[in-house]
Image (tube, rainbow, N blue to C red):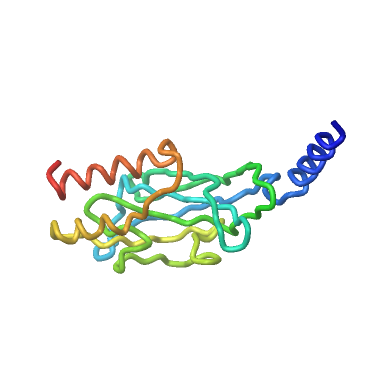
Length: 178
């Protein structure tokens, strides 16, 4: 019985003292998504942000995600986002990792033709600063097919990336006819 109580006490102390046993706040993030050539706004592009914990050195694990669609002006706004997780002995990544996608356009940030007006820390979106993300229009079926590889596999619950998944499936139907 004493061993069980000691074990529970140690686990409780580890959880309470761990950097992941508290909340972490990200954002806000804001900006505009435009066509690379014309600089016209791109309506309906998904802006998907992933947040991670750092556990045991170089190992990262998914903590949460947020996605929004751009409006008629190509603008997006993601308010401050607070995350709470209980992962003993873990810390937090300093910021989020973005994916911006619209069928028929290069996927940010992996497509070579995409760009951003300003990067934040560690290649992330800057907090509290509007950015402009430029996506190149893809003109051939082959370009669109290759671009699908620029959307990374998402290690997250599927309800966290519904819009991204829907737009990717829409693009697959155009490219593969299915």
